[in-house]
Image 1: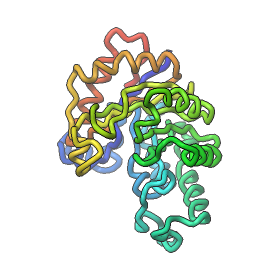
Image 2: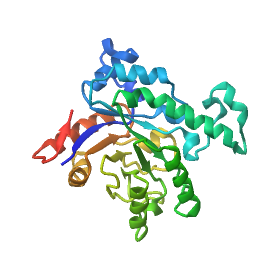
Image 3: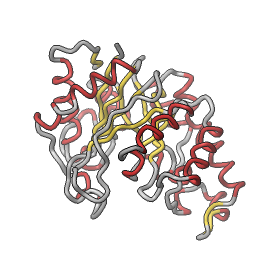
Image 4: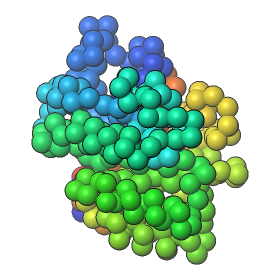
Amino acid sequence: MGEVAVGTCSWTDRALLASGWYPAERRTPEGRLRYYAERFPVVEVDATYYGLPGTRNSHLWAERTPPGFRFDVKAFSLLTGHPTRPAALPAELRPALSRHGADPGLLDEVWQRFGGALEPLRRAGRLGAVLFQFPPWFAPGPRAEAFLDACRTRTDGWPVAVEFRHPDWWRGDRRAATEAGLARRDFSAVAVDVAQGLPGSLPPVAPVTARRLAVVRFHGRSPDWGTGSKEDRFRHSYTSGELAEWVPRVRAMAEEADEVHVLFNNCCADAAVTAAASMRRLLAEGAACGVRG
C-alpha cells in the first residue's frame, strides 16, 4: 500500500499570500516555504511553467525543506506546446523565438536548461515529478503520439506525470489506449477533478500507469472552467461531500502506486490549503494507506 501526500499547486500564489494564511513573521520567501513544509509534505511549483527555472532556486528549495518533502515541478510552457512569450526566456534566447514558433536549436537549449535547473532537487531527493500539462487542443492522434515519444526521449530518467486537457484522451474506448501509451512510456497519469457537464470537462477517472507515482489535481468545480479569467476558472471551495467522492479513488490508487500526490489548484484566497487539510483528514479516517503530513 502506497503513501498519500496531500498539498497544493503553489505556496506563493498572490491570493494565498493576501489571505493571511501565513503569519506575519513568516512572510519572507524562506519563512513561507518553511511554514508550508511544516504543514504539507508536497507542493507543486507552477512558476516554472511561466519562466525557465534556475539552479539557485532549486538549491534554496532543497535547503529549506525537510527530508521526504517533494516538489512536483510544472514543465515550461514551450516544452508542452503552449504559446510562450519571448519575455519568458532569458534575453539571449529571445531572438530564436518568433511568431512562427521556436527553432530546433532553441528547443534543445531550453530542454537542457530546464533539466539542469532541476538537478539540485533531484540530488537532494526532493523532486517528486515533472508535470507535463498539455493544452486543450492537444488531442489524441498520430501527431500527439509522436510528440509524447519525443518527450519520452528528452526526459529519460525523469519522473514524469502527464495531464491531458482534451477530454477525448479519457473518453470511451480511447481510455484503455491512453493508459497503455502512458504506461509504455513510464509516464504517470494525472487524474483531475473539474466541473462536469461542460464542453471541456474531463471525466473523473483515476488510472495508475506508473508504479512509482500517481497524481490527482483538484482544479475546483467552477462552471467557468475553460473560460474567463484565472479567478473565474479556479474559484471554488470544496465541500466535504465533494472531497469524499475521491477518497475511495485515492485509496484505490494507493493500492497500485508507491506514492500518490493529491494537489489542490483551486487557488483563490486560502481555498486550496483549506481543501488540502480537509482531504488529508478524510483520507486518514480509517485509512489502510499511509497519509503523510
